[in-house]
Image (cartoon, rainbow, N blue to C red; front, top):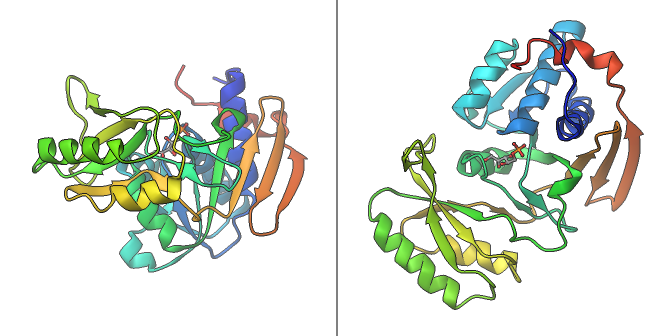
Length: 262
Ligand SMILES: O=C(CO)[C@H](O)[C@H](O)COP(=O)(O)O
Protein backbone atom coordinates (compact mmCIF):
# COMPACT_ATOMS: atom_id res chain seq x y z
CA UNK A 1 0.00 0.00 0.00
CA UNK A 2 1.25 3.46 -0.87
CA UNK A 3 0.67 6.17 1.76
CA UNK A 4 0.96 9.95 1.98
CA UNK A 5 4.10 11.00 3.83
CA UNK A 6 4.10 13.74 6.49
CA UNK A 7 5.95 16.94 5.37
CA UNK A 8 8.92 16.13 7.66
CA UNK A 9 9.26 12.67 6.11
CA UNK A 10 9.00 14.19 2.62
CA UNK A 11 11.83 16.59 3.53
CA UNK A 12 14.00 13.72 4.78
CA UNK A 13 13.20 11.68 1.68
CA UNK A 14 14.07 14.61 -0.63
CA UNK A 15 17.49 15.07 1.01
CA UNK A 16 18.19 11.34 0.91
CA UNK A 17 17.12 10.98 -2.72
CA UNK A 18 19.36 13.85 -3.84
CA UNK A 19 22.34 12.46 -1.91
CA UNK A 20 21.77 8.97 -3.34
CA UNK A 21 22.30 10.51 -6.80
CA UNK A 22 25.88 11.42 -5.76
CA UNK A 23 26.81 7.74 -5.59
CA UNK A 24 28.56 6.37 -8.67
CA UNK A 25 29.19 2.85 -9.93
CA UNK A 26 32.03 1.07 -8.09
CA UNK A 27 31.94 3.30 -5.02
CA UNK A 28 32.45 2.17 -1.41
CA UNK A 29 29.76 3.90 0.60
CA UNK A 30 29.32 4.46 4.35
CA UNK A 31 25.69 4.35 5.46
CA UNK A 32 24.56 6.44 8.42
CA UNK A 33 21.92 5.65 11.03
CA UNK A 34 18.49 7.17 11.75
CA UNK A 35 15.25 7.90 9.94
CA UNK A 36 16.84 10.12 7.24
CA UNK A 37 19.63 7.62 6.63
CA UNK A 38 16.98 4.89 6.31
CA UNK A 39 15.54 6.80 3.34
CA UNK A 40 19.00 6.89 1.81
CA UNK A 41 19.31 3.12 2.17
CA UNK A 42 15.95 2.64 0.43
CA UNK A 43 16.92 5.06 -2.38
CA UNK A 44 20.22 3.22 -2.92
CA UNK A 45 18.42 -0.14 -2.89
CA UNK A 46 16.14 1.27 -5.59
CA UNK A 47 19.11 2.38 -7.71
CA UNK A 48 20.76 -1.02 -7.36
CA UNK A 49 17.52 -2.75 -8.44
CA UNK A 50 16.58 -0.34 -11.26
CA UNK A 51 19.98 0.67 -12.67
CA UNK A 52 22.21 -2.22 -11.64
CA UNK A 53 24.39 0.21 -9.65
CA UNK A 54 27.37 -1.77 -8.35
CA UNK A 55 28.44 -0.56 -4.89
CA UNK A 56 29.58 -1.97 -1.56
CA UNK A 57 28.33 -0.44 1.66
CA UNK A 58 29.54 -0.16 5.26
CA UNK A 59 26.64 0.45 7.67
CA UNK A 60 27.18 2.36 10.92
CA UNK A 61 24.76 0.27 13.01
CA UNK A 62 23.09 -3.13 13.12
CA UNK A 63 19.77 -1.38 12.34
CA UNK A 64 21.14 0.11 9.14
CA UNK A 65 22.89 -3.15 8.22
CA UNK A 66 19.60 -5.06 8.54
CA UNK A 67 17.77 -2.56 6.31
CA UNK A 68 20.62 -2.46 3.77
CA UNK A 69 20.54 -6.24 3.34
CA UNK A 70 16.74 -6.17 3.16
CA UNK A 71 16.79 -3.76 0.18
CA UNK A 72 19.50 -5.73 -1.61
CA UNK A 73 22.67 -3.73 -0.85
CA UNK A 74 26.02 -5.49 -0.60
CA UNK A 75 27.22 -5.06 3.01
CA UNK A 76 30.85 -5.41 4.12
CA UNK A 77 32.71 -4.47 7.30
CA UNK A 78 34.94 -1.39 7.48
CA UNK A 79 37.91 -3.78 7.79
CA UNK A 80 36.95 -5.39 4.48
CA UNK A 81 36.32 -2.08 2.72
CA UNK A 82 39.48 -0.45 4.08
CA UNK A 83 38.50 3.04 2.93
CA UNK A 84 35.34 4.65 1.61
CA UNK A 85 34.62 7.10 -1.20
CA UNK A 86 31.69 8.72 0.57
CA UNK A 87 29.60 8.40 3.71
CA UNK A 88 26.07 9.75 3.80
CA UNK A 89 24.51 10.22 7.22
CA UNK A 90 21.89 12.21 9.09
CA UNK A 91 22.51 14.72 11.89
CA UNK A 92 20.69 16.15 14.88
CA UNK A 93 22.04 19.68 14.33
CA UNK A 94 24.31 21.43 11.83
CA UNK A 95 25.65 24.98 11.96
CA UNK A 96 26.90 27.43 9.32
CA UNK A 97 30.37 25.83 9.29
CA UNK A 98 28.78 22.38 8.83
CA UNK A 99 29.84 21.29 12.29
CA UNK A 100 27.40 18.75 13.69
CA UNK A 101 25.78 17.19 16.70
CA UNK A 102 25.12 13.51 16.06
CA UNK A 103 24.19 10.51 18.18
CA UNK A 104 20.45 11.03 18.69
CA UNK A 105 20.15 7.43 17.53
CA UNK A 106 23.06 6.32 19.70
CA UNK A 107 25.36 5.42 16.79
CA UNK A 108 27.79 8.37 16.73
CA UNK A 109 30.86 6.28 17.70
CA UNK A 110 30.66 4.04 14.64
CA UNK A 111 29.43 6.99 12.57
CA UNK A 112 32.54 9.02 13.43
CA UNK A 113 34.90 6.11 12.72
CA UNK A 114 33.23 5.47 9.36
CA UNK A 115 33.20 9.19 8.47
CA UNK A 116 36.91 9.42 9.30
CA UNK A 117 37.59 6.55 6.88
CA UNK A 118 35.75 8.35 4.06
CA UNK A 119 36.98 10.78 1.42
CA UNK A 120 33.78 12.75 1.91
CA UNK A 121 31.02 13.04 4.52
CA UNK A 122 27.66 14.19 3.15
CA UNK A 123 24.96 14.97 5.70
CA UNK A 124 21.28 14.71 4.81
CA UNK A 125 18.78 16.69 6.86
CA UNK A 126 15.52 18.57 6.88
CA UNK A 127 15.68 22.32 7.49
CA UNK A 128 14.75 21.98 11.19
CA UNK A 129 18.25 20.61 11.89
CA UNK A 130 19.93 23.91 10.95
CA UNK A 131 21.00 26.04 13.96
CA UNK A 132 22.91 29.30 14.50
CA UNK A 133 24.95 27.63 17.26
CA UNK A 134 25.08 24.01 18.35
CA UNK A 135 23.79 22.78 21.70
CA UNK A 136 19.99 22.96 21.93
CA UNK A 137 19.95 19.25 21.07
CA UNK A 138 21.38 17.28 24.04
CA UNK A 139 24.95 16.30 23.20
CA UNK A 140 25.41 12.50 23.29
CA UNK A 141 28.57 11.14 24.91
CA UNK A 142 29.26 7.41 24.65
CA UNK A 143 30.82 6.10 27.88
CA UNK A 144 32.08 2.76 29.18
CA UNK A 145 29.70 0.94 31.55
CA UNK A 146 32.72 0.44 33.86
CA UNK A 147 32.98 3.39 36.24
CA UNK A 148 29.85 5.05 34.87
CA UNK A 149 29.22 7.16 38.02
CA UNK A 150 32.84 8.34 38.08
CA UNK A 151 32.73 9.32 34.42
CA UNK A 152 29.47 11.15 34.98
CA UNK A 153 30.91 13.13 37.93
CA UNK A 154 34.00 14.03 35.91
CA UNK A 155 31.79 15.20 33.04
CA UNK A 156 29.72 17.37 35.40
CA UNK A 157 32.87 18.92 36.86
CA UNK A 158 34.22 19.58 33.37
CA UNK A 159 31.04 21.36 32.28
CA UNK A 160 31.41 23.84 35.15
CA UNK A 161 34.72 24.98 33.66
CA UNK A 162 33.36 25.43 30.12
CA UNK A 163 31.31 28.08 28.31
CA UNK A 164 27.90 26.40 28.45
CA UNK A 165 24.49 27.55 29.66
CA UNK A 166 23.11 24.19 30.81
CA UNK A 167 24.95 21.50 32.77
CA UNK A 168 22.46 18.67 33.23
CA UNK A 169 23.77 15.21 32.43
CA UNK A 170 21.28 12.37 31.96
CA UNK A 171 21.80 8.66 31.39
CA UNK A 172 19.94 7.60 28.23
CA UNK A 173 17.32 4.93 29.00
CA UNK A 174 15.40 2.51 26.80
CA UNK A 175 12.62 0.23 28.05
CA UNK A 176 13.38 1.16 31.68
CA UNK A 177 17.08 0.17 31.51
CA UNK A 178 20.18 2.07 30.36
CA UNK A 179 20.44 2.20 26.56
CA UNK A 180 23.25 -0.02 25.22
CA UNK A 181 25.07 0.94 22.02
CA UNK A 182 26.24 -1.46 19.31
CA UNK A 183 29.65 -1.37 21.05
CA UNK A 184 28.13 -2.35 24.42
CA UNK A 185 28.49 1.10 26.00
CA UNK A 186 26.04 3.63 27.50
CA UNK A 187 25.15 7.20 26.50
CA UNK A 188 25.20 10.27 28.74
CA UNK A 189 23.25 13.16 27.20
CA UNK A 190 24.56 16.65 28.04
CA UNK A 191 21.82 19.28 28.17
CA UNK A 192 23.95 22.31 27.39
CA UNK A 193 21.46 24.68 25.64
CA UNK A 194 24.29 26.36 23.73
CA UNK A 195 27.91 25.35 23.06
CA UNK A 196 30.04 28.48 22.77
CA UNK A 197 33.15 26.70 21.52
CA UNK A 198 32.29 23.30 19.97
CA UNK A 199 35.89 22.61 18.91
CA UNK A 200 37.18 23.00 22.47
CA UNK A 201 34.24 21.05 23.87
CA UNK A 202 34.88 18.10 21.52
CA UNK A 203 38.54 17.91 22.55
CA UNK A 204 37.98 18.34 26.28
CA UNK A 205 35.21 15.72 26.52
CA UNK A 206 37.35 13.04 24.89
CA UNK A 207 40.10 13.61 27.50
CA UNK A 208 37.86 12.34 30.31
CA UNK A 209 38.62 8.74 31.35
CA UNK A 210 35.64 6.52 30.54
CA UNK A 211 34.47 8.70 27.63
CA UNK A 212 34.64 6.70 24.40
CA UNK A 213 33.42 9.37 21.95
CA UNK A 214 31.33 12.53 21.92
CA UNK A 215 28.72 13.45 19.30
CA UNK A 216 30.39 16.65 18.03
CA UNK A 217 31.63 16.32 14.44
CA UNK A 218 34.01 19.23 13.85
CA UNK A 219 35.53 19.89 10.39
CA UNK A 220 34.42 16.45 9.20
CA UNK A 221 31.37 17.25 7.06
CA UNK A 222 31.95 18.35 3.44
CA UNK A 223 28.39 18.86 2.23
CA UNK A 224 24.91 19.14 3.72
CA UNK A 225 21.89 18.27 1.60
CA UNK A 226 18.85 20.11 3.00
CA UNK A 227 15.42 18.77 2.01
CA UNK A 228 12.06 20.58 2.16
CA UNK A 229 8.57 19.08 2.37
CA UNK A 230 7.56 20.66 -0.98
CA UNK A 231 10.31 18.87 -2.94
CA UNK A 232 12.96 21.63 -2.89
CA UNK A 233 16.50 20.59 -2.11
CA UNK A 234 19.76 22.52 -1.47
CA UNK A 235 23.29 21.15 -1.56
CA UNK A 236 25.64 23.27 0.55
CA UNK A 237 29.34 22.64 -0.02
CA UNK A 238 31.67 24.02 2.69
CA UNK A 239 34.85 23.55 0.60
CA UNK A 240 33.45 25.23 -2.53
CA UNK A 241 31.41 27.76 -0.56
CA UNK A 242 28.54 27.00 -2.96
CA UNK A 243 24.81 26.32 -2.70
CA UNK A 244 23.07 24.36 -5.45
CA UNK A 245 19.28 24.33 -5.61
CA UNK A 246 17.06 21.66 -7.15
CA UNK A 247 13.84 19.65 -6.84
CA UNK A 248 12.85 16.04 -6.28
CA UNK A 249 9.62 14.75 -7.84
CA UNK A 250 7.57 12.62 -5.40
CA UNK A 251 5.41 11.00 -8.09
CA UNK A 252 8.45 9.56 -9.85
CA UNK A 253 9.45 7.89 -6.57
CA UNK A 254 6.11 6.51 -5.43
CA UNK A 255 7.41 2.95 -5.55
CA UNK A 256 9.65 3.82 -2.57
CA UNK A 257 6.67 4.77 -0.42
CA UNK A 258 5.08 1.34 -0.72
CA UNK A 259 5.67 -1.38 1.86
CA UNK A 260 6.23 1.23 4.57
CA UNK A 261 4.73 0.40 7.93
CA UNK A 262 1.51 2.33 8.56
O1 LIG B 1 23.34 10.65 14.62
C1 LIG B 1 22.43 9.90 14.34
C2 LIG B 1 22.31 8.53 14.91
O2 LIG B 1 23.31 8.29 15.85
C3 LIG B 1 21.37 10.33 13.38
O3 LIG B 1 21.98 10.62 12.18
C4 LIG B 1 20.67 11.54 13.93
O4 LIG B 1 20.12 11.21 15.19
C5 LIG B 1 19.56 12.00 12.99
O5 LIG B 1 18.52 11.07 12.97
P1 LIG B 1 17.20 11.31 12.13
O6 LIG B 1 17.58 11.26 10.69
O7 LIG B 1 16.28 10.16 12.53
O8 LIG B 1 16.62 12.65 12.54
